[in-house]
Length: 590
Image 1 (spheres, rainbow, N blue to C red):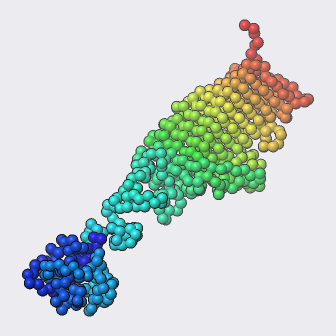
Image 2 (cartoon, one colour):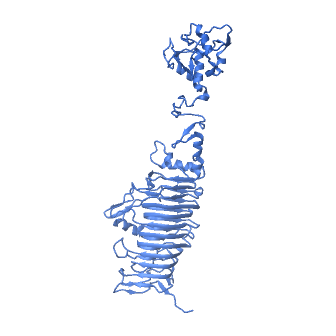
Image 3 (cartoon, rainbow, N blue to C red):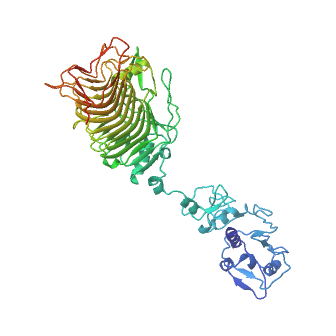
């Protein structure tokens, strides 16, 4: 309504009014503009205008005015005439006729007026008179349509503007925005951001979106990076330099009876790896990354490897997740890597916590070195998620080690399953020594050459339950050549303790040593030895074809008499073989 009032004032400023009265009262248009227009224009004043040749019998102005008349004076009749019909009702002209302009009838919006400059329409001129404070009100002017809906960009403070929610609730825009999470909450609270929200037109893939989102989160000290249930494309390293939680929605595994399984359109949260062979798609690096994690995400490699003339060659890749120089806590939870060369690598990771790592690995699932605190590895499952082709299995049984331990102090390891691999756990000489105080709950190995493979000097390892099934391939029914439960390589030796050892589908012996630089001791509380599929005519509990050290030998101590299963005929049992010695506990009554 305020707009219409100002419009009327502008119009009156344009039109001269002629009046005759005995005792005139003279006022200026400025004084008129301060009056209440809906009561100030009285029928008495209109009646006083009848004597003028510029008005008709109703007191309505009928002659056009040209030029700037804003300074003209207006003369009131000074008396009231109640029988006169009003010229204006609610700011609208009644039955006007403008002559000399372009509008006739009730619509004056296109009437041509001159205000000292170029001629313009009355509608355009009246808009210029709208006060700034009135702009943006529900009047059809300046960004709002006739219903009050916003239809143009606005600037300035719009917090007081009214908004209607989907359920019909009326609320100010400021109150509505206040009900949403603030930017601080999105970055640092339990809400998080999505890389999708940081996409910029022209990005070749999702790598820049990940980097922008992580940069924003790190500005707020870390936070949650949500991964939607779709496939993201990453072609270079996504670096995590602060405590970021990369959190997906989960993943869906598959299996191919022949050939290989295609995960290119698999359901769940996936990162499709397009990096070169030397670049890890996820790099958690530096002390400020202490507290970072990756969970409920899967990684897809389009070409895990190729088979030529029956020989499989994997595509060599950097570790899918690399943890370096954090020296603190990093967690990997429920992560899937089908057809991956190297899974998770930690070098001076600190306290790495793995709880749920699944996949088919050609080098390793997890490798650690220079970890001097309590690393925890739980629920690792290495299986034929991508392919069970015979050529692939043959490669894995010669090269894949599910866990590789360099220098790591007192790691807690449990629920490890290795399928079609060289070993379930392999140790190697770390940059600063061997693995010490390794504590393993359950280690299960199926179709593996060895279950525990010692390659470092001076390992100390304790295993509660170890099961080895040394089948060649995954369905042959015969043991792999020299399949054993525990093996000592040429540079490997140490002290091993096992609570329950079940050695099935083994060939020569459950325990084998080829060490030449140090001798080992193995203590087993309960042992089952199954030679029913062995090719050997003589079965052994332990074998050492080489000399571990001058005057020394591999020593195996059994807490109970072992359970031995031999072939139906033609096979004998000798518990100690070559340089190895096996000791039974003496059953002495106390």
